[in-house]
Image 1 (cartoon, protein in one colour):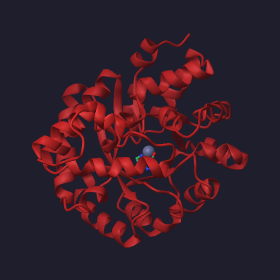
Image 2: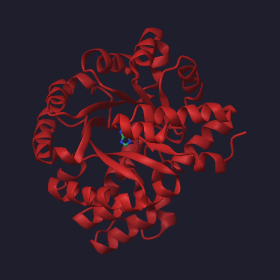
Image 3: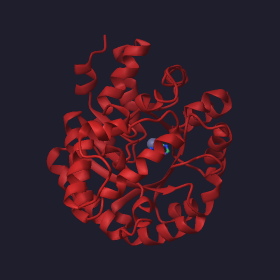
Image 4: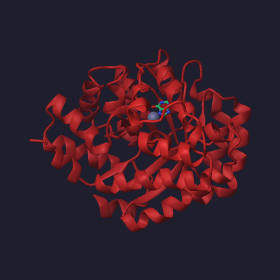
Length: 325
Ligand code: HPA
Ligand code: ZN
């Protein structure tokens, strides 16, 4: 059966990982000191005490203020390198890292500071045998105009990006709000994905828009799709990946959407397992695999299929994919 050692040793691809969500309490305190920022906490225990949330909105209220400690290029570099070392320990061979530039530019940090620090870490990750790329996300609760400006800032760096995503507060912020920016990004050669979170009332409508109108190539979370068998057939036929995050899900749903993941596996829809915001949800990618395998008694074969799906739906060349599969 499936052990922690097995989930750790399995070669994996990480496709749903917010770099800001890898900010561990110890690094948060270190950066607060380095940048002389008062975050209101001075010990790891005090930081951890602030980690109380039971839905997307209450999580985001803890998540964004913590980012104040990220100020300089080296802060973004240190954050990403700390994650890449964790990734290497977890046998993550390939990772597509989400980042939220507007969470930083809205605080007065330059776009170039954010992306330069992250990119320098992406380059250095190669020495750890981690093949890393970046996905820039728009904050969906910000305006279209802000997304337009952010894309304009990003395009000079487009060779450092593999794709575009959409995250933050989904309530009343459907994917279609950003149809134009997604179209422009695709025209610039970037891949497309969007969050469709599990605790949203318009979830299925958002999934439908993203797939049928905007042509996204993956869905982040997106497991509510099981409510519409036609859409499940659609993603299965086209190989559109669904990136499920059990430990993140466990904060809003005790079943972690495990039944949905099993249903998707059954229908040969390429669902895969990822870690979302590991510093906030209690575990990195191997822990996410293990939590799901343990609760739903998955076979090794099922776990291997989930890991295979994470490579088949990764935005990598066919040659690289063959190497991993
Ligand atoms: N959903 C929406 N926004 C986010 C998430 C998420 O899972 N993680 C970080 N920002
Ligand atoms: Zn996410």
